[in-house]
Length: 185
Image (cartoon, rainbow, N blue to C red; front, side, top):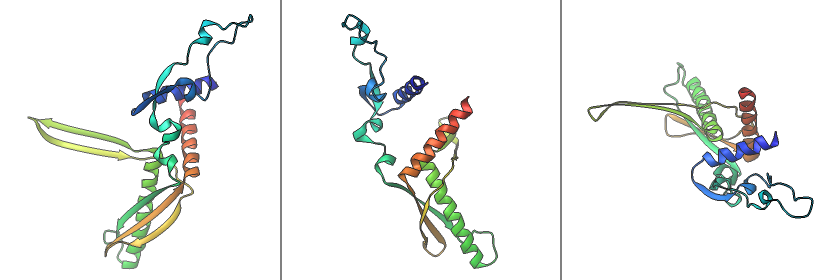
C-alpha cells in the first residue's frame, strides 16, 4: 500500500510542469526497489543500477518550497458594495455588505487552498470572436480563519481581510485529499 502511494506521488510529480531533474529515490523519501545483496556478498545487477531520473517540479524540491509553504499564513481580502444590498434601511445595508465582504474573503481563501475550477468557451466565426464565456467554481471547507479587519473603502464599499495559518492550510489539504481518496474507492 505504501509503495502505491509513493508511486502515485511520483507520477503526479512527473505530470506537473516547471520541472527540474532529481533522483526518483530522493522524491520517494529513500524508498527503493533495488534487490538485496546476494548471499555470497556480491550485488545483483539490478541492485547496482542507479535510481531512475525523473522530472520533479521545482516547487517539490526542498530549497524551492511552494509559495503557500514559504508563507506563514494566507491572506485574503473580500469586497462588497453597500448600496446594492437588498434592504430599505442604510444600517441593514451596511451590515449586509460587511457579511458579503466576509464571504468574498472566505471564497478567496478557498481559491488559494483548493484552487479554482475554470470553464471557458469561445465561439469564433469569420475570424471574429462571437462569444467568450468564462465560469469559475471553487469548492471546499475553510475553518480557523482569523478576521484581520473590516474597513469602509470609499463611500459605498466595505473591505474585509482574513488570514489562515499555514498549519491549518496543510490540515485542510490533507482533509481534502482524504475525501478524494474515499470517493475514488
